[in-house]
Length: 79
Image (cartoon, rainbow, N blue to C red):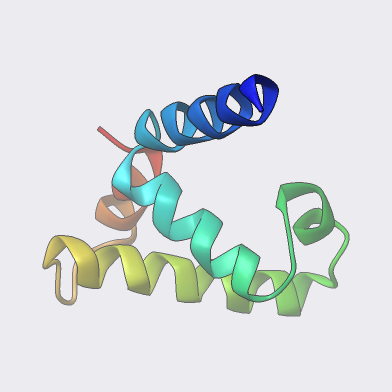
């Protein structure tokens, strides 16, 4: 039981330490049963479409409408 509690606590702490942009990225990838490694193996057009969706979700979450590509990239990095 203690081991399970420690694992849950560690998972929670790991999640809390992520930036909002990282959480959005992870959620979108997870919804597609992808992780960073599997994303890299996708064909470029498919990968680019997912990356564009992630940028759009980050912009929406931060209230950035019609911002530049540089703004989207800075939001992906986190705070």
